[in-house]
Length: 173
Image (cartoon, rainbow, N blue to C red; front, side, top):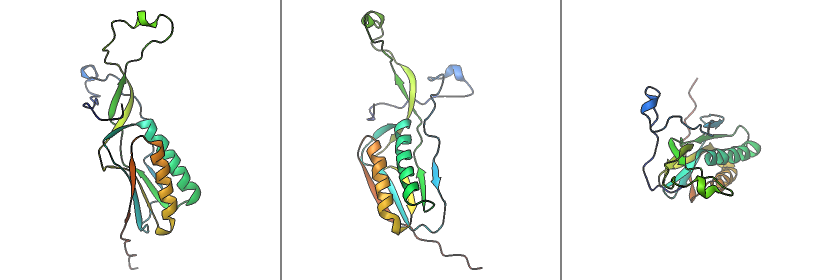
């Protein structure tokens, strides 16, 4: 379910595991959030912003991150800073149905099953940034193309917002 129609399921406690809605939290595919080189000399910031309320699975965000970071790494190595700005908290539950011959006899009585935790997702609001790239103005076309490649991996509609960043003056020695 990619559109936000109901409340999120994220109740998980380490202190009282028997009192949880979710007994075991599914792992997230998204593990790396900061890439590139952190410098004070970047003068441009690009953000990939959502144009609608949407729910994105962690593996979709990870796929977009990989494609975008690899493109930046190959074209402007050590001249960018890339960050993932969302974290998947919401638990996705799924009722796994039996398939094949005679599956209808096995699955009877389970028509409204609540399902088991399968994956985690991030709930994205309209206008919320998902990725951020900081780089120099000379690398603008490469960074925009990297963001568009990331947007192609995600469901929904997105826009790339480019803004200038004030460069901090060098400290006097």
